[in-house]
Length: 299
Image 1: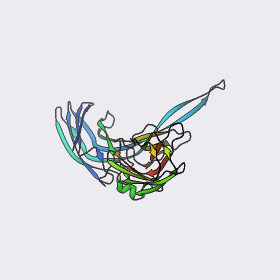
Image 2 (image 1 turned 45 degrees about the vertical axis):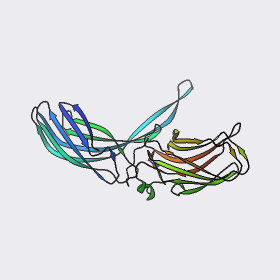
Image 3 (image 1 turned 45 degrees about the horizontal axis):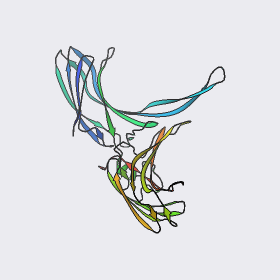
Image 4 (image 1 turned 180 degrees about the horizontal axis):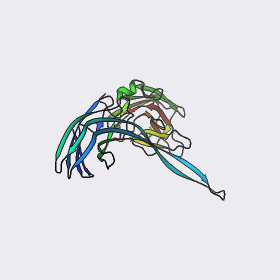
């Protein structure tokens, strides 16, 4: 479904439309620009640019003149890449004149995909600009998402955990063993999934519940970089007694937050599926396997 943004900048009223705001790597996205000038306006070129910016957080420690130390968190930003497309050159607008153009914008085949987290991430913007040398440019910009396709994860272009793309993986904790099967593999944000645990509890266990969680660890891979763990899904079953082999089924829908499995120049995101045997007055055994997360099932 087309997405429309409007705005005004330096005497020009803008309407920017994209065929979609969730962009597929390696594909073209069609768009349309309409402008209306309040006064006479001349520009050297009209250009549309798709731009990615990476951000990451790290802790900086400083020492004052009296030898006292303090630390604070710094957020760094870096432009990863931009894809400019020249739409028109030598644009001349009379007062009150309206003009429109269509264009196609290429999306880089390897992204990187949008990552929505605090300590590390990638933001994408699309900008349309009328450039005027020696004067103020007029422009409009809007946020878009670049998606992480299943095919890109399966191709090996993105590093994933050792068993992240296996339907089934062995799990073990505190004497309990078994296998954990996921469908689909990889998981996809905003999409349903099922998990099947075949469990050998290693003896009788009294529980509070069996809980499942998909956890995404996002980290800044720089000196003194921060990290955070985001729970993309959680669910529980009221199982209170384990006395023999058991098949446990869990199902749910992953959060729609863009948390793809990804490697960046200054950060990364990786995911794990936890089945937690919640135990009163004792440490909870976690049966854990690697998972991979896509942000679209279209490719």
